[in-house]
Image 1 (cartoon, rainbow over the protein chains, first blue to last red):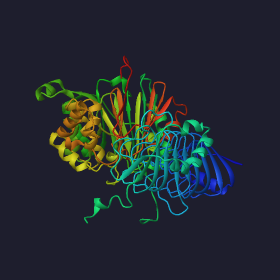
Image 2: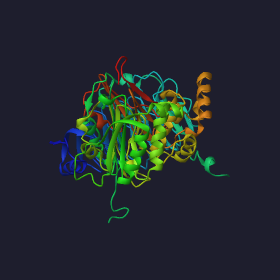
Image 3: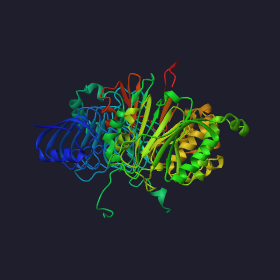
Image 4: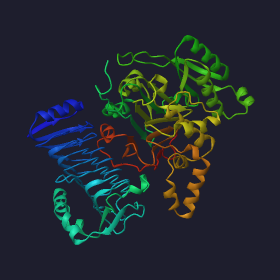
Amino acid sequence: MTRIDAAEKYFQQLNEEIRGASGEIVIDNCCGQRYIGAGMSGKDLLINGVPGNDLGCYLNGGTIRVKGNAQDQTGDTMNEGTVVVEGSSGDATGYAMRGGKIFVRGNVGYRAGIHMKAYQDHQPLIIVGGEAGSFLGEYQAGGTIIVLGLGSKKAPMGNLCCAGMHGGRMFVRCEELPDDLPSQVNTAVASLDDMASIEGSLKEFCKTFEISEKEAFSGRFYLITPNTKNPYRALYTFY
Amino acid sequence: MQYEGQTRIPSGCAISGIFSRSGEKFNGEDIIRSITPMHDRSNGLGGGFAAYGIYPKQKDLYAFHVFYDSVRAKEECEHIISSSFDLNVAEKIPTRRIPEITDEPSIWRYFGLPYRKQLDDTGLDEREFVSRFVMKVNTEVRGAYVFSSGKNMGVFKAVGFPEDVGRFYRLEDYEGYCWTAHGRYPTNTPGWWGGAHPFALLDYSVVHNGEISSYDANRRFIEMFGYSCTLLTDTEAITYIIDYLNRRQGLSLNEVADVVAAPFWSQIEAMPEEKRRYYTYLRNIYSSLLITGPFSILVGYTGGMMALNDRCKLRSMVVGEHGDTVYVASEECAIRTIQPNLDRLWSPRGGEPVIVTLNKGVTP
């Protein structure tokens, strides 16, 4: 195991040290350094402190675990691997993500999963234990977003979610969805088959954070999907 | 010389603020340490600070901070100021010579009150009189720029990275109950001393991360009321909008936030009757003061501070609390670096103002 003290270290130097290390790496006293784990694969990072923006951008394998909160654009354009945030994660978490997993125990900020996409066996996944801010899944083009709203009394999402969504799936655990979702998405209570498709991932999430499966699986799950293959056609062209 | 694509400047402006609700005063070292981890959000073309409660001995006098490009500008400005104000002090603002800060103008400050007779003759209230004086100097005296004009507060700004600007102005020598800071990455203007943040008028100061798209609509409206947007930067317009709505129109800061970061019409339509009427009224009356495009701002004023994001929250902002102290910053690291143990940390929603004021009975 390699330990790196990030105190007073400029982001370039810190990232060089991470690139130079292998296997398990623990970073202490992290304070806002950007691009940690950029393009990384085959390593396991544990971060104590606050990592900076674009944590795990272009991540191509391996794992990153943050003991506290992460800032903005976590997992920006990541391709493979896993990011685990024990606290909350900022705006645009999973920005343009194209593979791999992001697990957040707490909340995510605005625009989580914005323009997430999928291709063949690259099927990105974001699971949020708490709530998501507004514009969740904006322009979502593929992959799966699951919001559990553990401890929430209302729909665990902000305003105008799924705006521009045209692919992928979103699961939200709540009694009632907000009424400002766009007309281009379908909403339905998730079927047994739908739930079976995410059961393994949800169990993994519960295990990661030691959350009771009973709690996480309880209540109603809604499934949100775009309602046609090309839901915005009529917005931009006349035909 | 480097061309486009040969270098990348990963920037986006940084703001930070610290406010002690119990009125406890602290020097400028904390705010400098707070803005430092966000170094890469700015590019060295502007940094600045606003501090409240720093001039207790002259707390009833207006403190003017002025940049001069030339001796002539200084003479012209001093002629105007000394004919309108009973001045107690005129002095150079103390600075520290450091290699990171260069090409500094001459930087002076003056403490004073308007002459009673002049004030009575004009029939203006004192704050309006001072505001008009600031506009007059900034539009009519070439090479002079009044960048701070409140009581018991001051703005300190320069071209440079904020941590260097803080050292340049010897902020360790000032103690205030509220500090705000800005690291600049200018998007539309070349970046000069006057264009650095905070922008201030009277005791209002604004630091801003973002780039508003409604600048010209806002400017055209606000210039009808005697303001001159001389610097072509959006933050200057925001400062005047806040002064106009809060001081001149008498709106509360919550109402100001509901004007500049109003909800969408679709959201207003879904509101209960009373709220719908309130927002419809504000949006109709002040339609030209809706600020669109990305912004996160910190507004300082005597006894308080307001943090506000645009309604779509296109810029990041987090708020932390520890005891009586409130911290606001573009990034969490800026708060944790000075206060690792927070009682509470949250991200306000877009358009939702966070207003902190001194506790009851605490005088600024």
